[in-house]
Length: 225
Image 1 (cartoon, rainbow, N blue to C red):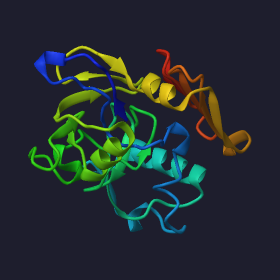
Image 2: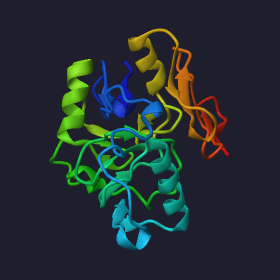
Image 3: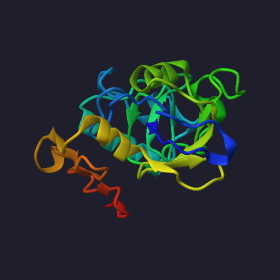
Image 4: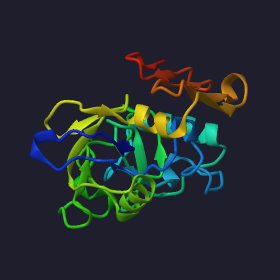
């Protein structure tokens, strides 16, 4: 995610080109590739050990995970993961953001500050939705946008962002679209095996999941199932 603006929120230095979680080009369409393509099939819930945000999944969480695994064609490996329900970012516990899911999914509880290995403010000093960013997040951000400012920020699923406790000061998706330029769409499959996502190049992003029947749009509609 990119935090881009040129104003000075609450007296902090100009954001210049960016404060960001470096999902580094991964958009909603990558919903089941990076995390789900590393494992084989087999085994029931009792034989699995998967946690999100330090806790076990409830029945809703398991059902959702199984739907995503069906879309991805592979099981999520046993292990510990984090998920940011406000923005949709997710990754392995202790690691950087690796994928962008839809926001608001029932995957674990509150996102801990130490989800990416920090939490004390001495790892990178950049917090997004309470999570201290991993050094790889910041390295990718700097490579793409030239700089990263310490501080505490919020980001929502529509791409709006601002200083923690303050108002929105910009939109990540518009900034990313401006950098990419032009409309886009990606995906594949048909019927219950289909997943498609796209955008208009001006900040509007949509996604449709054939298996669950859910859709998402960042124009205020949110997730609809």
